[in-house]
Image (cartoon, rainbow, N blue to C red):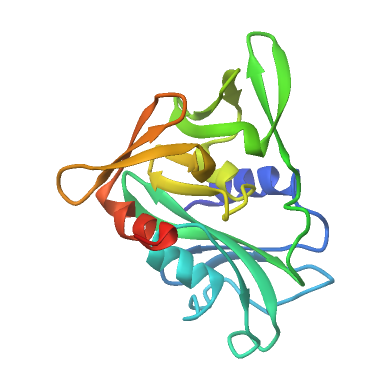
Length: 216
């Protein structure tokens, strides 16, 4: 990841997170960038290894968004971490991690704003059926509206509540409340039938995590 990519990521993150958030960007082995906050500082330096048990380590290894409390034995101080893997062409390249002194509440914002033609519409998270990568933007579908958000799927994933939304494919995040049926598919994967009739695949990469998360 080059400095320009890191700068672009930070420009996006600063729009959403409060000032008391520390931000870490890593590849699969070590940290590339770290911005501490006054509230919590993990003392990370570029080049430091990604520690086992950290939020970043879990996101890289699971290939899935992680939102969890991390005990002080990892960095010497406790923190609440939100980390998403950076995935390119199906391969995990690293992770972006937001570090909070405690769990954010509410989950930063309960709305996602989509553009339809020349107008913008705020949509409550619980109305979203699924999100899909389309042409470097994110297509957002509800029962009554569909439109686009300017952020890509991985950027948006950081702001969605993990108890409602789950990544099932590199191109899809679904709202669990809108899954009507889970059908077996070939090669140990599944096909989701959403309540609006959309059929969404669960890829092999996400199948085991999907099953663990939904308990089947």
